[in-house]
Length: 304
Image (tube, rainbow, N blue to C red):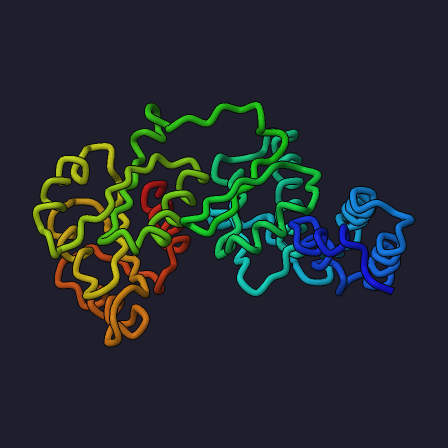
């Protein structure tokens, strides 16, 4: 029997992205729903509703994740979801559970600013489109495509205004996030958004690589502002920018090598080695493209 034309269109839509995702966990149920759509006894919109209602309870978190909800209290910085290699239902279930924990902490007046940060890194657009089809019970998500990062706001915080932290303790704990070139933006934005979610004020200084040294010199007033407690520098190619910055500021510099460059950059290894061999004191180096790790280190610097 030929498939209905409407079903063919449905299979190309975002909604069917939701249907396809769940076949692995409940193939018989989904198959029967699709069969009813194909036979004309169930509309596409009703099928979507049935599938969405099934999904949140179909994913057993304990079967694939053991979340570390105590990490913020123990280490000062929250756990995040590394989404690469995970399915959309897995990421959604983890985020929702983290939001539930934040809601419980807020209700008990036991939630720190950093502990309210709920993030998933390495989320490409296709994965986000799938995640966004899944109903979440405990909060709402937003997506930054440049950073490939999903942030979730717990429902207990949705009426709380979150400004730029221009005053008070947060204003005195500014972190500058700088990058050498525009192609370093995904890593730099991963770091910047992570810090903002954790309650830090972030100053962005982008496209100031050493090929035009006047650009970083022109940014000196912002780099040396008394409110700045740490500088994150993201760079690929020769990886020289962190050394230059570290020779100009009094605060710690967190160097984040990126995988940007031509053949002999070896996927960021050359930049990482340059940073590890910096002759400027006070440079700490994290892994290649690890904007989140750079943010975590900078957060500990400004809150120590």
